[in-house]
Every structure is written in structure tokens, then in C-alpha cells.
Length: 319
Image 1 (cartoon, rainbow, N blue to C red):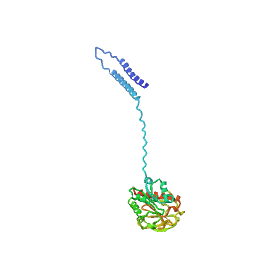
Image 2: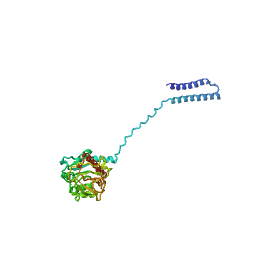
Image 3: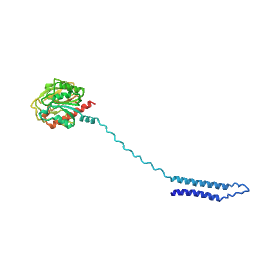
């Protein structure tokens, strides 16, 4: 407000100066003759006009200077970026598929009351399965159904056997669907030349000889995932014999497959005396000793590793 009063004061001062100057100069003309040109007078008038214009312009400039300015722009607040979605790694994807796998199980120790250790392993892992127990007829029905299975388990530890045409159907699923397979078979001495020979030959193993009583089992490749993922399992050196005879068979390398012998009855690795092999790019495990001749606390974690390993390789082979 004080600045506005100053502006108008400057304008009034300019006008007053012009009025005084005008009054100081005679304006009464001589009626008898035209006024003579007075250069001094003209110069003074011009100077006064110029000063008045300068004062007026200065006042206007001062008025413009006090005009309120527009508020400064507000700082732009950057919006936080939405967090990028974490893409699952291949390992995470395979683990999720393992947990969602569909498994068919034949486990024939149900009538003996000695425990269903394969089923226990699946329960521990939270994997869905269809369990037929010792009902081989039901097992065949499921094999012949149109249901897609990721893993087939043959736990034929008791004296009832899965033989003959069962292996033809399993072999078809193995080669056509790339299904995973875990087979616990102690009776290769009677089956090796039958339909199971297609699976054994494709695996790269052959029957070597029978053995009657359980003995210590040594890991021939202790760093293999089968002994370490997801559980670290020590060699089955301590046994508790349940079966009085015909407890298992020994196998050796032979055939066209990619078999690796992982464990055996000898302390040092050889191409013979094996009791555990993997093949078909890790989708198949063949076990020729009997679970219940060893401690449950060792066997169940080992089966969890079997299941994890074969399913992992199944899903790597099947997009």
C-alpha cells in the first residue's frame, strides 16, 4: 500500500511541476502582433515535458515492480515406481511343479503292518498321490487309464510281485510320456528276462546275482543329489534284518542306457555288486534291496530324495 501511495505522489509531483512552469511563462498574447518565437522558452518547455515524462515512466516502473509475482512452481513429487514383479527362476518353477505332481503308488507292505514308508515320504513332502496298496489289479487299472502321472512308484518289497505285462504298460509310459519311475524290486533273478528287460536294457543295467540277507550298503558317489537333496542321508551301514531270505539282488552295468551305479554291497565302487542305479537322464531309479531291512529314520529321507530327484528330471524333460 505504501508503495502505491509513493507512485501516485510521484505522478502528482510531475503534474505540479508542469503547472508551476506554465504559470511562470506569460501566456497573454499581444493582440496587435503574433508572438515572436522565443528559443529559450521553447527549450524550457521541452525540458519540462521531458522531465515530466521521465517521472511518470519511473512511477509506472515502480508500480510494475511491486506487482505480486505468481507463486513459484511446486516441486514435483516423483511417484514411487511399482515394484517389478520377480520372475520365478527355473529352479523355483521346478520346485513348484514337484509339489503339484501327480503320483501313482503301488506299495505292498500294507498287509504286513510294518509301515508304509514310501507313503510316509510323500506325505512329508506334501505331494498328491494315488495309493493302491497291495491291490495290483487296481494298480493296473490306473496304469491303463487316461490319467497323466508324473511319477510311478513300484514298491514291491513284500512277496507279492509286479511282473509281466505291468512292465510293458510302465515302459510305454516311460518312453512315450517321459514319466518318472522308482522301482523297488528284489526279485530280478526271476524277472530279468521278462518284460522288465526292456526297462533294464534302456536303463543300462543287468541282473548280476541274488543275495539272501541284508548287509551294509555303501554310497559309491556320496556327493550325488540322491544322497543330498533335499536330505543328507548317510550310507546304510547299520541294518536290522526283517526278511529272512531273498532280500535282494545285485546289478551291473550293461545295455544301451546311461545308468550310473550309486551304491553297492562293496565298500569300493565297481561295475558289479550294485544295489542302486539311476538312468533315463535321472528320471528312473532302480533299487534292488529291501527297505525294511534298514532303519526307518534313514530310509524315509532317502525316499524323499528319490522322489525329488526323479520328479525334478521329469519336469526338466517335460516343459
